[in-house]
Length: 296
Figure (cartoon, rainbow, N blue to C red):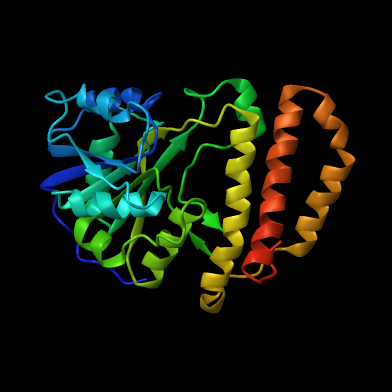
């Protein structure tokens, strides 16, 4: 990895929030941004990916309350990465900080991002899961508090797309791959950045409270997409050294699923965990077929 010259503090941070039909939760995120303990200058750019609900109306309730607040239009093409690219183009800041519309940034988030930005090209923060999620939904997808950027697929580390920052010149150099509409989009971007020689850093004080899906159907669909996208990721990065997925481990998980079919008739916790695991594994199979790779 190339070593970068240490940068000065950002002059203006652009907070970029991609959103699609975020009426239900985006107010909470905007209120959290309003409560930031940050001495520097920032603006807020909400990127509408084609919402059909009252998302824009809710956003405009914060006009005059959040600095530089505006809505960028990214409705011509659906997809998270397309919205991120549109946000980067609309931003006026020299440093871009990304968060999701349905999460909630802690009050020290911007300050921690800006501080970490002085020593890296791209910064990833920490995700926490207790505040916004009931115990039932946390049982569906057990998660540990992050203390470093996680290694993904035994290849390279990756940062969370819903809690990251990047210098504007780096963002526009790299761009986000719009073929990753959902699932592995942040992994692909993180890996491509590292392979291009950019320096990543972890900012433990840049905390985002992450919200899980609360309906089993939505949660299963999310994990299906995660699984399916892994095969596309492998096709894109196998020539760079990304290893094939452990087929023996996949077979053990399939055997576990068969043995635990009775869990579907038991508690909501067990049923949700089974569905999440099954959806992910089915996604891996479908992705392998679609992109003609073996990545189970």
